[in-house]
Length: 207
Image (cartoon, rainbow, N blue to C red; front, side, top):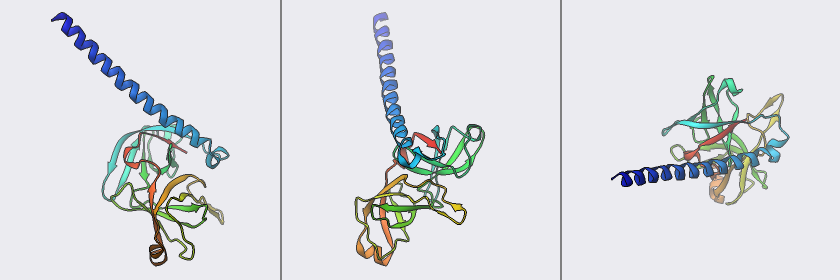
């Protein structure tokens, strides 16, 4: 009985170590992607200082889509700061407290991001398909210019008359998945899939 108890204890400990090892590998992969994005042309020459945080709560509903992260105003986080994962933009800071912040995700019904299709150069505004975190819409497309499935959409990062976009230009956003000529000319829209896994965010950076 003593030997059996010892073996069970060792097995439980081995399982804990295995799980911890898997989590460490997953976190390492996420951090590597964030570091790579930090070094991209979109951010390398910018004045942004990334603050890394972890998602500690989720609040997805049909209309609201947000997460809470474990960094806040004490860490230099401010309202409207962009938030990225290793795959690209995921949202912006909606509220900041000393030790935590709420992130409004791209899939929230109040979210709107100025964007452009590359290399086509077509510009528009990304809005969510409410209730579907894997579906975004590029709205207000110039119907005289057409985009195609597989093209990349990035932040536009505009500046005009002393005003500027909340987001720097060139951050990865999404891929065009459906862009029929009929929809583009009639609705001035194209369907997108976000690069970031919005439903399963873990590590993020506030810019």
